Each structure stands twice: as structure tokens, then as C-alpha cells.
Length: 374
Ligand SMILES: Cc1ncc(COP(=O)(O)O)c(C=O)c1O
Ligand SMILES: [Zn+2]
Image 1 (cartoon, rainbow, N blue to C red):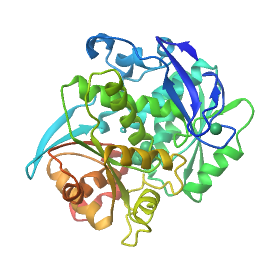
Image 2: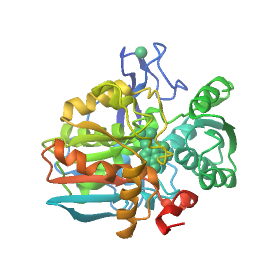
Image 3: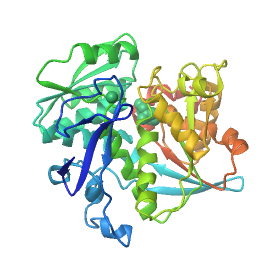
Image 4: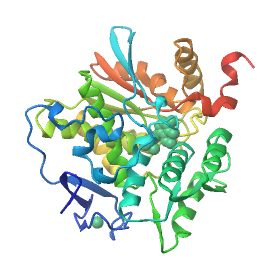
């Protein structure tokens, strides 16, 4: 238990409960399980506003609820806009995460991850990524004067790969997403830290700020739909809502729904049995076949009465068309959440839903030619 920033946190194994120093370089527990950051004692405040730094236009607006806030790095992340659309009788709140500094929600995680790297004076961070998280880490580590080595599958969108290199990262191209994960870990040297977002608890902590923003804006939803690969986004947003409930600002958690893309469906397979259907490989960001936090993801679905659905390329294309006709410039991975909406409406009792639009279409321009008929 340690004071870093304004409140006490514990770095704790999600399975065996073993605790580690917050400045530890461990990226998982000795038992092999993922680590979590836990707030030891929640601040006691009348209003959520008392915990907010109103003049701070970045993730550090919520610095009182985050570790290492005294040395936080920033590129102006967070405070993404929300727009309301009607879909049938449902209020759909699109949170435009693609407004982030590198064009995806991953900036929230990289902001925290690089802040922690700075806190322990790390010189090099190592990450594996389908593209967006790698770019977010590349930009944030460049801003903090820390080296970044990013392992990516060689077929990751060229826009994502080139931008990482432009930020000065060492980009290691691998044959597959799995090879990227394996090599990032096996080639780690003693003076480097592994910040892989599929494992990293600090990365996850940054995602909480998305829930805090929604709450601060006075938006209340009964459901949330998140396109999910490793679950860092889903778990972080969930934990943000959980904090709000713990502190007594919110009565109930929304139901969390996960969307996966055909072909790589570990969460669906675990909940409903093996999924057979068309490919969803247009969603280049949903490629983690063995999410280290699978058990935690399923627990969130169970606890909130949520569910998981799968979409294929056909569904992604028609969702993309609809979103672009609304002027929402997203990448195919982000469109999966909207593609899953109709099926999810049929499962739950939904009146209002939050759909983060996770990444910009501008980085994946070569993959969306079908929208203009080319
Ligand atoms: C645009 C986009 N949306 C969603 C995801 C899935 O995020 P997570 O791995 O946190 O589940 C990714 C992951 O790369 C992504 O790039
Ligand atoms: Zn453990």
C-alpha cells in the first residue's frame, strides 16, 4: 500500500491476491495471472465535482483518482465529445474517442502507462499491438523522452505502422499478432519494461476516465457496448463506473455488452460455445485470441447482466456505411459496436446506450475504399 499521487493504491494479483510495490517492474504475478490496481480507501466527498480539477483539459482532470498524478505526462487526451443519435426508440450516445491525440481511446492508457514508466525511470518501454495501442505508446513515449519498441503483425494498417515509426519507435514486424506478443516478452532486456496493454494494469486505469467524463457530463445510460479484443477498454470503463458506485455517486452499473469479430471470438466461445460464422477480419484491431483477462471480462458480463455478440464483415460494412452517412469517420474495428447494436437490442431491455467510437478512419483509409464504391 502506497501513496502515489493523492490516494492510496495497491498493485495486486487478480487471482492469488499477492501484492506488489507500485514501482515494481512486474507485468504479471508470479502465479501467471494479471495484476490489478486497487484504490485502498476512496476519498470521501459530497460531490464528484469536488474530485475534479476543472481547469485541467486532459486525463489529469481526474488526477485525484489516478496514480502518479504529480508527474503525469499529457498530449491533451480525454474530454472527447459525445453526440446523441436516436436508433429506433433508443438514445445512442456515441462517445467520439477518435478525437484523441493519436486517433484512438488507447491514448488514455498510454498516457497512464508512460506516466508510470516515467515514475520508475524506465528508459525503454516494450509493447505488442495490432496498431493503435502501439501508436499511442509511440507518441506518449516520444513526448516523455522514453524509447519505445513495438511488436506488430506485418499486416497491421500501414497508416498505424508508419505513424509509429515517425514518432521514433522501433517497430518490429511479426508474422502474426500472437508472434508479436511472444517476441515482445521473450526479447525483453533487463533495463526495459513490458507495458503490453493486454496485461498492463496502469493502461487499464487510464480507461476509467472515459466513465468519469460521461458521468461529469450528466449522461446516464442503462447499457454500454464495447468492441473487445484484450478487454483493456471494457474492464477500464467498467472499473470507472464501479468507482462511481463505490463512492456513492451512482446507484447502478450499466449492463456491459461486448462485440467481437467473426474468426477471433474467445469471449463468445467461453460464454456460449464455439462460434461458427463468417469472417470479421475487416476489424483489424480485434485480434487477441487468448486475452489474459478473459476471466475478468466474463465476470463483468455476468455481474452486469450483459452479453457478447459476434459480427462479420457484411455487418461491419453496413455499419460503416451508416456511420459515415452520419459523418462519423471511424475505422472498421469501431464500427463493430454499431453493427452489434440491433442484435443486442433484442437481448436486453435497453433504452439508452453508450457506444464509444474507438478509433479514427483516417489511419485506415486504404481499408475503407468500399465506402466510395472503389
Ligand atoms: C479501434 C479499436 N477498438 C477496439 C479495440 C479493442 O480494445 P481492447 O484490446 O482494449 O479490447 C482496439 C484494440 O486494438 C482498437 O484498436
Ligand atoms: Zn497471483
